[in-house]
Amino acid sequence: MEILFCFDERYEQHFGVSVTSLLINNFGEVSKIHIIIDKLSDNLKQKLDEISQNYKVEVCIYKINIEEFYGLKVTAHASAANYFRLLAADVLPNTLNKILYLDSDLVVNSSVDELFNLDITNYPVAACGGKAITTKQRLQLQGNYYFNSGVMLINLDYWRREEIGLKAIEFIRNYPEMIKYWDQDALNKIIDGNYINLDSRWNSLVDAYSNQSQVNQESVIIHFVGSLKPWQVWCMDTQKELYWTYLKKSMWASSTPTFPKNSKQILSAIRYLTLFVIRSFNSSFRKLKHS
Image (cartoon, rainbow, N blue to C red; front, top):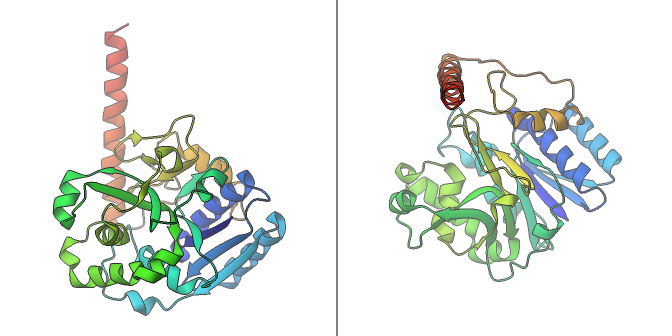
């Protein structure tokens, strides 16, 4: 299997967790890790070399010019790195016809061999999605389905032939007012429902802020979406322990939880902790009421 990650320096540690969980649970099954980044520090290079040696996997690095994404929508939660994957078909070798893309805020909890070997010959991508009425209206989609771009089995030949990535970037530049979820919106606009819809076990979403989770015993990939992440000190979600388990097995094992760095993060933490207290109180009250 050949796997793709795209990230910037803010997500190096979290990439470390994702790739470590992948390689531990797919040891000997991954031949290459492809990485699209804008900077390669000596520290990251050293860690990647160790990963390559420890897991007997080739690490291929592609540095891109971040200026290509200047002017595209970014937020405190999402940087220009969200758009790196749109260049996959143009940056990766032309001899490579398929790649499994994984976000860097997820954990792979078992084998992804079945997913990688899925036949996507006639489709641009396989991903987890579902019906989305309001999003259909916002993006003016013809179809009814919308997918999450955090886990994608990408048909690179299809993307090159139809210029999927380039068309997505063009859409973002031409219609910024329609963009809410960055590259994900653009890909859904261009692909417009023409994808293989995967079972949620391949991308089980955990939104700690809203206290929603798709995780069950069959979940293979657990994806921490939303603004509240398991590495933040104020995150109380029980699923975060999975992140820390793999972090301690990674080259980033010495990392510690992050604290709020600005007023926006502080307010977000206060809102979340308030909600957490209210939910805990309501849960205890219901239990007491029925006891």
